[in-house]
Amino acid sequence: MIDIHCHMLPGIDDGPGTMDEAVSMARMAVDDGIDGVICTPHWHPMFWPNGRAEIVHAVAQLQTRLLHEGVSLKVWTGSELSMDASLDAHLDGERLQTLNGGPWLLLELPGYAPPPGIDDHLQSLRRRGYHVVLAHPERYDYVRRDPARLYGWVSMGVAVQITAASLLGRLGPEMAALCRRLLEHRLVHFLASDCHGVRSRRPLLRQAVDVAGDLLGERDARRLVDEHPMSVLRGEPLDLWDYAPISPVRTKRPWFRFLLERG
Ligand SMILES: [Fe+2]
Image (cartoon, rainbow, N blue to C red):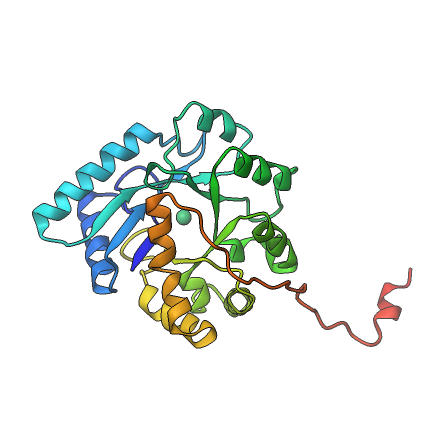
């Protein structure tokens, strides 16, 4: 298995504070059956200005230490890019780290409201040759309210990553239920850990693949952690499968609602 979203580089974002903790995370990943990890520290122009050079250097240091410690985990470069007005300028300046240096970007949107013009922005990234993976949309309020928004983005060629802990219910039953619906509608292309340390959000990929396997069948579930990540590492496009339209979550409204809505 290959984990495409993991904060394993020490001291550069809200991931592990030390190299020792990063090595412990790597051991946990190996114990979970993970063969390789794309290290995706946050990038934000103000809060996490992690550029390509720092990430390449940090990944090389971590790989050397893992070899030295006998931990058989391969690590690759990446970054979790915050959607920001300056994103395009930073991409043009080749200052940002894409996934393994190829055309794939891991993109995080704000959780509370979609950025204005997001559809146009996603389309323009596609036109410029980038392939976008949307990081954990199950955590965005507006996707929870209206998952059809995600269907629209997948129709535009955007791939979707959900987090193992979300699917397993560690972040609440509502998020788990949405993850299951998204899987059933074939709107998920990657399962990843989004691990931040040894205490928070353990890898859990093996368990999450089992749950996804109950919904999709084992072969398609495995694609989320092996074939699809391999396509990313090779810089190849992905066939986004036979995804299906999804309806908004229906909320029960009381029969006497007309009384509440008057005045
Ligand atoms: Fe993350």
